[in-house]
Amino acid sequence: MLIEIDFQSEEAIYMQLHNQIILGIATAVIQEGDVLPSVRQLAEDIGINMHTVNKAYAVLRQEGFVTIDRRKGAVIALDVDKAKALAEMRNQLSVILAKGCCKNISRSEVHKLVDDIFEDFQE
Figure (cartoon, rainbow, N blue to C red):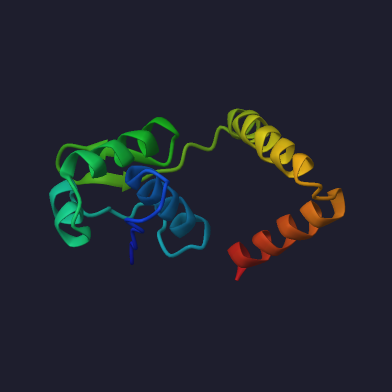
């Protein structure tokens, strides 16, 4: 798994890490049962604070993407509560779509974008 952090980005480092792990799962680079690097190891590899990695892992656990095992560490274990996932997605998409409407992005442009993204995940 290759994690690249943009230290110039306005996005928090823990969210960059969080998002890249989710993208890794969606594209099957990371699979259920895979063990993520230890907090200490990943922090050293990327050159960030251990607390930042710990926060990313905690958010991933809270969102149902990983479990934390005392012996193994962070393990990819997907919570498949589809109803909950759809409700969370609806809330997040509402804000994203509202921003798009403010920027005059059309429904057809959004549909094409969603289709393109889904194609990326299925390759």
